Structure formats: structure tokens, C-alpha cells
Length: 454
Image (cartoon, rainbow, N blue to C red; front, top):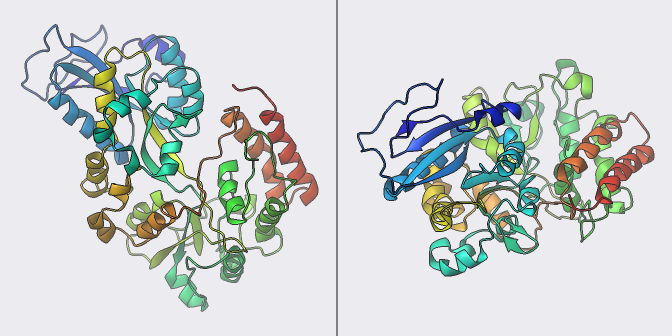
């Protein structure tokens, strides 16, 4: 493998992302480096690519937990010597604007990743190739039925597949981790999967010791899709069925859910106010419980390192026994301008395969399976992982639990999220009356929903 600098570096610098990517040419020696580039370091004795080689680029998530993407891109390149595959690392938070910039300049990667938050917008701009016909021709290879239905829906725009999910998790407020030693000391029961939100609030209130700067919970839905998980536990949604109108202030169940959050701080004192929240973390022992996602399970175990006993439960059910979650997916897509569509589709299928997902979870040890049923249901993985993963799997497989990501019909996710986050804090921290606060957030979000498709 050899290293290679990105082309059109001036474009990336103009976008403020000159350091966002690192290119690695897989299984072939690149051309001579551009002026000012560091010499390539060869890790392979293979011959230089022939003139017939196709050059393709794949974007990978620049994080250790996503090293599997680079590993399987390299494996694919070794199996396809007619392709000079350039493997680039991209910082997740910079990908949305980089996709726009590189698409506009004609330099979009042949294979690129997207988070569900910006994926539909990119697809609507014609960046990605429609995949249904390709998959119909390769049905045995892609095995669409092996993907969770909710995850696969996250790869569609207006019913057309423009990507395949390479991961799914049930959202940021999906799990509750709890400090067993601390709860034992207080004589309090442990959270269970069958608890409801009111029982959880009771526990958080009783576990709070404000004088010792220990709080029972950190729960605060900082994004509207985090609140959506709670709304679903209350048997409702923030948006109407067409996702064109807000129901935050007009629906009784939404109002009840929002009041529950306000009461955690204003009535129960079970969660910290703004000025008290800095430095409060579960791993430091200053939270009796913490609401977080499945991505934290292995990380927390490593960080706590035996300092205290802890365990996990699903986020509590709503007052009527409903369970809610919001599926957060990430997709790989093929550029609509790729020079080698068949090769690009082949790499896409490989990166989202059972083989890649199993390796990332078992060999790399991320503990976070991809979006395939065969990976999440792998008994070796489930036996090696914390039991909470088996319960998350059961939740995914329960058709009665809705979980799609609440993307607005006009695809203006960023604007909708900005207006939510800029107004909802006054409500949840009690800075304004409940009626004033919930209506202000409702109106600010409806203002965005009333706009045409972005």
C-alpha cells in the first residue's frame, strides 16, 4: 500500500477542510507526488499499475472504530488488480459540506459515506447513483432481505435506493447505564427493561445527592430526533405522517413527554441545570445513571476499568407501556459520476456485507455490528458482547416498535435541528413558562417545515 495526496487541495483549503482527508492508494504505486507532497512510503513490492488500470476513490470514516472500512477497501483492491483504489479518510462532521464541494467540482469519491442527517439532501441533489436495477441484477450478492427494514428505508429517497446502510444504532437516548455500587449504597433498585419513564424519574430523584454533586440522570434531548424517541415511547411523533407539520405543542402526548423532561429538573431536581452540568459524567461517578447509545457500551467498560460495577437497561417505556427509539443509520453510496459503476457497486456491496460487519464487530472488536440481521444475530458476537445487544436486537425485530429516522419531507434537517436547539433549552430548563416554551419551539420548527424542499 502506498500514500498519496489528494488532488485539488486548493478546493479543500477553500472549504476549510484541507486536513480533513488522508489518501491511501491501495495495492498499487501511485503516480509521482505533486509538488510539495511528501514522498510516498511503500508498503508493498507490487509493480506499478498498468495504463489499463481504473482509478477509483473511496471515502472512509476517519476514526479508529471505522478502521474496518479501510481494511475491507484494501481487501477489495487486492481482489481487483485492474483498479487503482485510493482510500481516503474523512472526518465525519466535515463530510456533509465536502460532499457538496466535491460534487460541484466533479471530484466526488466513487464510493462515499453519509450520516442519515444529511444523506437524503445529498441524494436529492443527484450526487448518488440509483441502485435498484443494479441490486436486482445481483440479488444473491446483496441480499437486501438481510438488512433491517428500518435501516434499509434510511437508504431510500422517494422510494428509490441510493445507498446501503453500513451501520445502525437505536439513537442517542436508547440505553440507560447505571452505577450498581452507588445504587446499592443508596438502597435503590436497578433499572430494568420493563420500567417506565415515571419509575425511572423516581429512581433518578432518589439517587440525586446535590450536596455531593451527584445527579440521578443526565437526560436532555438536545436534538429533535432524540426527543422523537421519547415521543414514540409516549405513543406519538413530533411530526405528522407526511412530515410536513409539527405536533410538538398541539399533541397531548408530546406535551406530556415534554413536561416529564421539565419536571426532571424543575420539580424533582434529578438532573443538573445548565450551570451545574459541566464535568458531570457517568464514568467519573458523578451520575448515578446516564442516558446514552449502544455505541457507549464497550467504551464505558474500558473507561471505567473496574472502578465500580455498572450495568445496562433499555431506555424506559412510556407511561402506557410503549417502547420508542430512533434508528440512526449511515450509508455507503456510489457517485452518479463514477467512471466504473459496476466496480463501484461491487465495492459498495462488499463494504456492507456480512463478512465486513462480522469482522468489524468480532475481529476489530468495535462491538457495534453493521445493519445486517445476520451480523446482529451472530451467536458468537452476542455471546461475547454485553447482553444489552441481544435486547437491542429483539427491539429491532419487534415490528410493533416504530423506529424510522424523522427526516422532514422538505429535507431541511439542519435548519430544523438548529431552530429546535436554539429554542428548546428555555423550555427544558424552565427559563420560560411551559406553554410559552413549547409553543416557541413548535413555531420555530414549523417555520422550517413550511419551506419548499431544499
